Amino acid sequence: MFMKKSLAFLGVSIALIFFFALAFRPVGASASAKFSEGNPELPDSVAKIIQKACLDCHGDNGNGMAKSHVNFGKWNTYDVKKQAGKAYDISKVLSKGSMPPGKWRKNNPDNIPTQAEVDLIKNWAKALNN
Ligand code: HEC
Picture 1: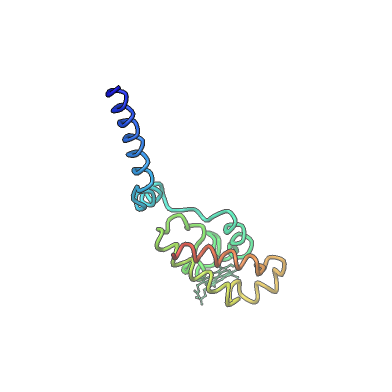
Picture 2: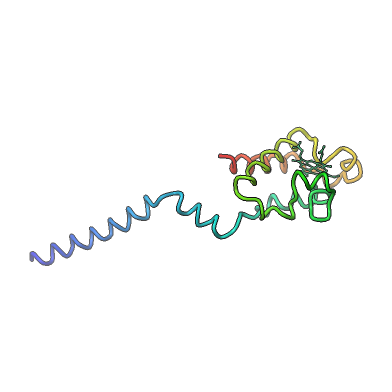
């Protein structure tokens, strides 16, 4: 009788230890694990918009001036902090409508980011900067 009770107690204790270890594992641990696997990629939803509206100039084959600000071909070489800063700049120029530039807009009217796409990028940038 005594043995059964203490075994049950042991079982519950072990279960509780596992529960707390999982529930309260340090948040930083998973973030740094992610970091050590390489820098985050652009999410597909964001990459699609960038591809149609920005890569002409901000890709590896783009314009030197544009690439000096952001080169999406090298996005994965930017660390998390740099990505967050660039994402903030990107959401700003999209909100203002200063990128893509006016002349490009005239020549590529179908590829101008829609309001929904601008909002998507803004939310992405906000999440990275939280
Ligand atoms: C036609 C070429 C072209 C396209 C298309 C283009 N850009 Fe640019 N972008 C430039 C150039 C050139 C500069 C540098 C301007 C300067 O230094 O005065 C620049 C600068 C920038 C900057 C830094 C300037 C600032 O005010 O922070 C950001 C951010 C940027 N572009 C984002 C984008 C995004 C996002 C897109 C797509 C939605 C885009 N660009 C599309 C040519 C382009």
